Length: 173
Ligand SMILES: C[S@@+](CC[C@H](N)C(=O)[O-])C[C@H]1O[C@@H](n2cnc3c(N)ncnc32)[C@H](O)[C@@H]1O
Image (cartoon, rainbow, N blue to C red; front, side, top):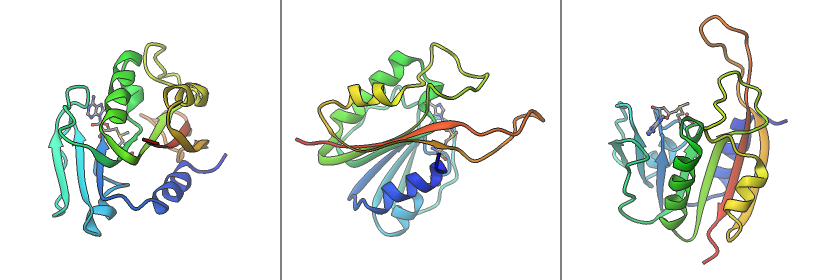
């Protein structure tokens, strides 16, 4: 399995979006460089983030309540959907699809059902690659790959990494 970061960067390198929505953006690790290049980025996170970049518009909000005020070329969400119940994640993804412009993209980076984390809650969204394909049946699937996150450690526990899906799809119409 490839490192997830490598797969994400490969996907982002090939895109030329005019506007980006980053759901659960954290510090905007993956999208801040687009803002630095003059592309309009909206980042949403429930926790306050100190992001000082002219083209990065940060909104402090729970993504379950976010109203998607317009359409975006690229909607990106990384390592957040597993915090949501399955139904909540499905609802967010439905809104992501509806709020993507024609020929725009969704890039999802999700903890997968193949992950063996003890923290995995069966009610939460840990999709298989097949489930994401089903959800995006009406879109063109450009990338769907299982990768490995960077090794890390929680509270003195074992060093581990997660099995993560990188999934890129394009709105056909
Ligand atoms: C693991 S971090 C990932 C940050 C970033 N997307 C990345 O890949 O580096 C998860 C982020 O999701 C945010 N988050 C978790 N649940 C959320 C929710 N319901 N609404 C908005 N943000 C949420 C957390 O505050 C945190 O910044």
